[in-house]
Length: 79
Image 1 (cartoon, rainbow, N blue to C red):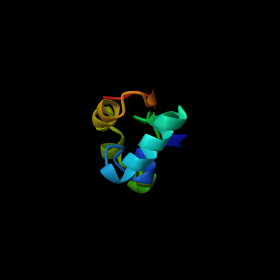
Image 2 (image 1 turned 120 degrees about the vertical axis):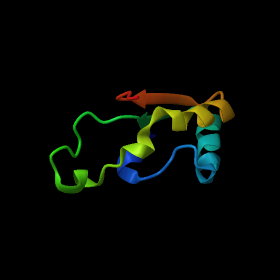
Image 3 (image 1 turned 30 degrees about the vertical axis):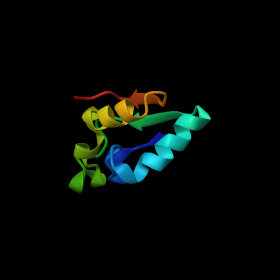
Image 4 (image 1 turned 90 degrees about the vertical axis):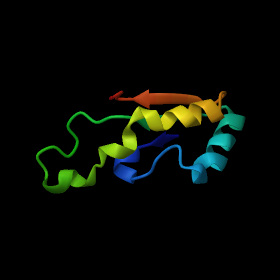
């Protein structure tokens, strides 16, 4: 399963997603988050809607702590 918080405008640690993360953990699934962008939206009016505030890795800290057996992959690591 993959998530693109900056493009989909969601915080991974939003508790509304916790039932999903719990199910992924129980099924042994890997969850990939794009946690940074190199040039997506650069030079485009409005950045093509990319909002970097959603993809900061700090938002995965609570998810990792609350779901210790969830296999989390951070793609394109950022700050």
